[in-house]
Image (cartoon, rainbow, N blue to C red; front, side, top):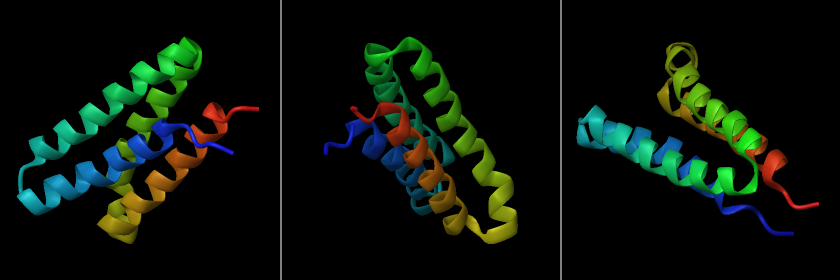
Length: 98
């Protein structure tokens, strides 16, 4: 069983983007990490299926967006890990082979 690299990269983009913003104090740095991972994943997803790419990119951006209101309820890191887990599961489900 192999895991599509986009599962790992999209997860790293969400967690790494938050960590970069949090620890540097520069939100734009976090945005750059998030965008770079998202762009790379989207390129890979389009190669597999443009339709799936649209859904996966929407899910990735939704995870980022939903982490903000969720953080007000459960805290920042739990929120980031929650949306990242959901995104990883969805990405895995769509990109797994067989």
